[in-house]
Length: 362
Image (cartoon, rainbow, N blue to C red; front, side):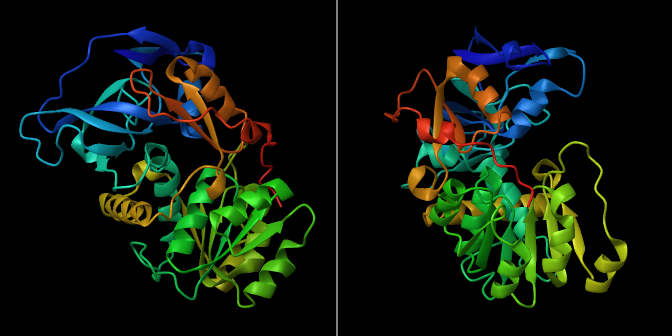
């Protein structure tokens, strides 16, 4: 079988296509034929490392997310059968084998059934983005622990950077759960993507006044803000958040420090919830997985042009280029097709690749 491997941290050039023997699954494990591997910022950041290039103790295969077909099951494994369609999460977190491979062996806990009618492209796009979005949307103290249709009815949600993968998933999940969704973007092209994702109100922060536009929709403030750029946006967030509301932050950028206005936050009893999907509690992760499966099954988490998240495709031997595209902040979802399985996908979307990166600040 073929897989991507790297032995040192560094740029995309450290990624190499290698040939290895297939591994048999042990008790509690399954082997998955990877049809599509999803690429997220966390994947290139893990590959890049935090400084000078470092030699790894063991070769590493990148990418957390993916979708495919059960190829073999280990002894005593009863959740899955050979031939079953599945989606994968957290594959490379504290493990050496990610989804940038023709086959991957995983603990069955990290494997979930793909609902009937849900494509492999959607399955490979769920993991990091949708699970992060779910935690952000459920971080409010008085909010639901698990999203479901109607669970956010009557609430106003503000999603910063609605053209990004997590922002896209947050729009879709919040809309599915019954919220009124407001999002911000930096161009008319990205506004079109946000509308397609299902947002009810889209604000171009470069040409419109975010505070006045949001206040017109939610005069008493928004209950939850899903925030991608706190360094730039927290001041406005504090103006827009409702009393007792939550600002859920899933990235801080560089430099890492964030300044918070204490008195204004105290006055509104604001909650700041930082989100890293890897380290959420078992209960929070289980709730997120269950909700994401339900939403996907309802058709609420579509990807592609029609759903506001253009797909940019690569083959397995082009994984370095796929990582570079995500590192360059291409707008859309970067997916890698396995070389041993041809799902009949179309060519990569050049229009998505041509879109400028989203600045995220208001």
